[in-house]
Length: 360
Image (cartoon, rainbow, N blue to C red; front, side, top):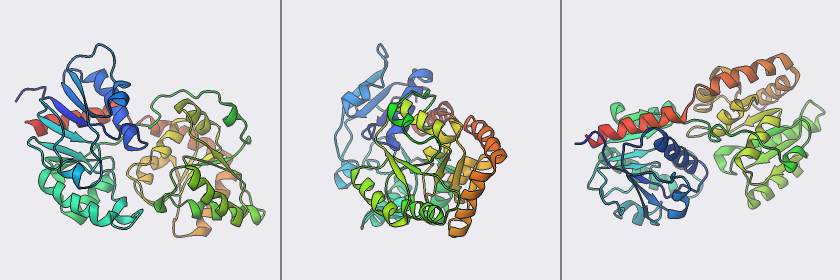
């Protein structure tokens, strides 16, 4: 086998948040440091082409629109041509492959916090197939690796953990009239409205603090769609919280929102990695998370933790965050230092190393 195997990369989710962020950064780093590896990029041609520099040789873009989830996506054959190894950035990888497969399991949220009925059964079925089919499985956190080993029987030497870099990369903050119109001080929360994101808990606790006359701030919510905003408004109205919304922002605007926020509150109960935690620290914003992995693994020594089973502890942590100015200053410096320990280049190097092993 050549030292430079041709790699097929599943890019069908390149336009999404979360997994799409991973794909886009992987491709950017790939073309910066690993051009010697020929690649076949499978997915939406227009979006993929935006990430491929002009004049790059050894790269083919192959349109592929098969559903990511469901039987047709799992059992269909991807339209690669010369690839010697297949890389999937998500767990729903095609299973009938004549070449080695390296798949990614971000998290087990479809099992632990299913967004709808049947997702847990579906994921368990796919994990059982991956345990037999995949040469290697990648995870972004040691927490997910341990879950795969202890709960689903994956051999530890076949599960490699490579942490991601900041989702916004090295994006510089940009001026935005909408962001500048937000109050001088506010809490920021980022994420979709899903059960594990714990939005209702966050809104209700901040509302109770405000109604009790205790130190608090308005909440700016970013990342919610129209229906989620409606649910958040209803929850805020019941709890008496002053809530504001940031619609879809550019990376530069999002970087500025992080930079301006007094603190990021991240009450999520489960994540694959937790991009907002790393992004906030990178932009000098103190971070408070539930005391659960992988959020605490990412924030490490730089974050403030609260007991997710204790509303009182959440309240006390918010009060401390607002009243202890010296602590916030230390968190800013520690957060920048911690964020600098993560790198998309390091992640991509790990992926490439694993793909070479699989191809061999």
